[in-house]
Image (tube, one colour):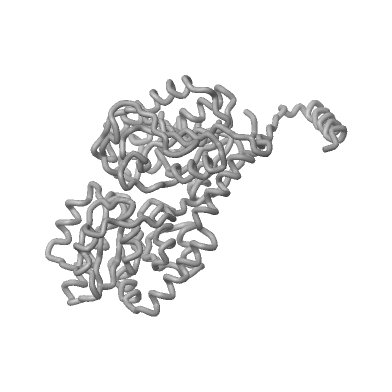
Length: 443
C-alpha cells in the first residue's frame, strides 16, 4: 500500500473540506485481520430457545452458529421466556452454552399470555432495563447485531454502541411500532400515534444511530431507511433461510395419523395460529370441499395460538381438517416432507420463515405474500398466489394442485429456487462476511 498517495489524498480532501466549510466525516473500515477473532453480541428476544426440547434454530441461532464456526466468540442476549409456547424455559437468569464459542444469556423478565397485551409491553420494557445493566457488566464486544423487534433490543443495542463506540447492525424484521395500527379501527389512529409515540422515537433512534441496517426483506429495509437522516449507511438483504438439518421424528406419535392421510393430497399449514395469518379462509375452503364430496384433499393445521379454539369451532363436522397442535423440530420436518402442498397465508409478513422451509422440501407453495416474495415465487414458477380472504381463488388453486404432474413441476421449481438462491448455508455465510468486513460510518 502506497502511504504517500493516501496521505496526499487525505490532505487534498481536508483542504477541500476547509474551503467549502463541509463538516468532516470520518470513515472507519472495520475489517478484521486474517484469523482475527471477534466478540460479537446478538440481541434477540422472541425466537425459539435452545433449552427447549425439539427447538428449531431460527435466524439468530443460525447466524450465531456460523459466526462460532469461524472461531468468533458469540453471545446471544435473550429473555428466558419462550414466545411461541408462552412459558419460561428456566427460572431466573441463566448462562447456557449452546456450543463451542456460542453462549446464550437468558434474562428473567416475566411472562405474558397474549401477543397483543400490556403484559407483553411490560415484558419488553423489563428486558430492556435488565439488558442495559447486564451489558455494562461485560467486556466490550467488537460488534453488536440487534434485532428489531423488539424495540428495546435494537434501542439498547444501538445505545450501547453509541456510548462505547461499538459498531452496531440493526436487523429489521418487522414494522414495529407502525404495524400496531393494523389492529385498531382507523378512527383511533391519532390515539395510537400518541400511545406509541415513545416507541416510535426509540425505533427511529436505532435506525439513525446504528452503523448499518440489514433485513430479510427489501420492503422492510426501505421502511426503516425512510426513518433515517443518514443515507450513507451500509445496508444489505439477507433472507431467512430454513433449518436444513434432517432430524428423525418419534415414529410412534407419527404413525397415529398415517392411516388418516392415506391416499390423500395433503395441504399443510405450519406456524402460529394468530391474527397475522388468514387461516379462516383455509378452513372455509376445506369445509366447502368436504360438503361437496371432495375425498381427495386433506388440510392439516399445525401450531398453537390465540385463534386455535375459533378455528376448531369453524371446522366442526369437516373430517378433511386435522389439527396437530404444536410440533417440535423433528415432527415439523417430518410433516414438511410428508405433505404435498404448503400453505403460507401471511397477511402482513413479507417473507416469513415458513416459506423457506416449504421451498427447502420442494413443495408447491400457495401463498398470500406480497412484494419481493411474490415476485420471486412467480418468476421461478415455484408457487401460486391468491389474495387474502379470497375463497374462490384458493379453491381454484386447490383444484389445480390436485393434478399430480402440475404439482410435481411446481415442486421441482421450488426445490431448485431454494438450492440456487435461498440456501441457508449461503445466506448466513454471506451475513457473517458482512459482519466481519463491514465498512462502518463513525458517528
